[in-house]
Amino acid sequence: MLAVLGFVAVLALIIGLIHLYLWKRLVRDTTTPGRWRRIGGIAALVLALLVPVTLAGTQAGHYWLAWPGYLWLALMFYLLIVLIVLEVPMLVTRLVLRRRLTAAEPTTAAPEPVLVGAAGPPEPPSADAVAAPDHDPARRLLLARGAAIFAGLTATGITGYGVRTALGPPRLDRVQIPLAKLPRSMDGLRIATVSDIHLGPLRGRAHTERIVAAINRLDADLVAVVGDLVDGSVAELGPAAAPLRDLRSRYGSFFVTGNHEYYSGVEEWVQEVDRLGLRVLQNRRQEIQARGGVLDLAGVNDLDATGDSGLAAGPDFAAALGDRDPSRPVVLLAHQPLAAVEAARYGVDLQLSGHTHGGQMVPFNLAVRLEQPVVSGLGEVDGTKVYVTNGAGFWGPPVRVGAEPQISLVELRSA
Image (cartoon, rainbow, N blue to C red):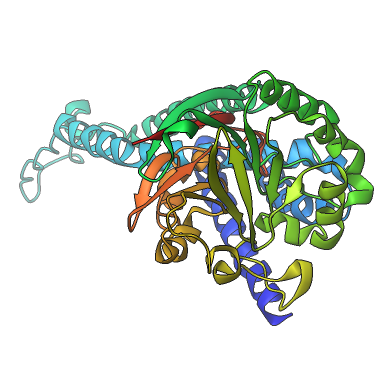
């Protein structure tokens, strides 16, 4: 409980500081004291409250908050990025203008000496001797307004592009991956891989139907759904997931849990996915006999699973990979790429993962690299090949920038 309260407090502090910065740059610096500044301040406060209200409200089932709240979250993020990038050129411009104004100011002439006893008061200084008025505040106001307009238009354009990309059809990526142990008879075995479908407040049954149709067009040998299928309970999202029963493949469709399944009632979802015809690989492996050869397909629970036993148990690599024939190739389904650190100790040839969303919103992909060894595409961890698909959905803002939604067709080749 204390950990949750601490997280909420830190999140509230960060959101508050971001909105304070946005208020300063977009409201205080661009307006003079008065009505419009007060209106801007109220708007900044309302938007700051909208973020935590949306996060809490959608968890409580108030899905109507999702669109305004998550769209503002994305717009806020890109406003922050653009304004921070503008800080240096804005500072340089202000310094240049200040220097020019200082150089243009005439120096005040020294007063003429007055003789003692001379008649009449001294003459006032000439107009040329009076320093020019300081127009720097007006220039600063104009500069701040220009930066605010640029930031607003840029952030809105990026967010609009990201919404269009996120809501568009998943891109199909084909990748060939050689495996040294793969029998020649199994050369070309194809695995349709999808992750992070994220059924929830903003994506429903139509989203699932589009993904299933795209996978079925591939006529794959295997289908692998590598976690984060849902953001909600079976009661809420069962009908949205139902089209998964129509997935077609030669040797079966398989599923492993992602971290979001553990936030959404993992026990019920494992049973529901199994009922829909996908074989759930919970810390176990399946022998795939195809084209006269054999391949081990293994799966582990997500790294964030915290249970001690049963369906909520954490990953058990020994149960999934131990005591197997080392001459066979093994493909591991694991939601997070980070699982490859442990999988490599068991000689896994290839791990298929998701979780990262490819970063979802540039430059957030740079932060993902601090946690995961591979963000998108094919990489390697301690001798184990790791392929990470971008995911077909999104989490939070319905925005994807620099990481299109993706379905991947992984073709295994004999080395």
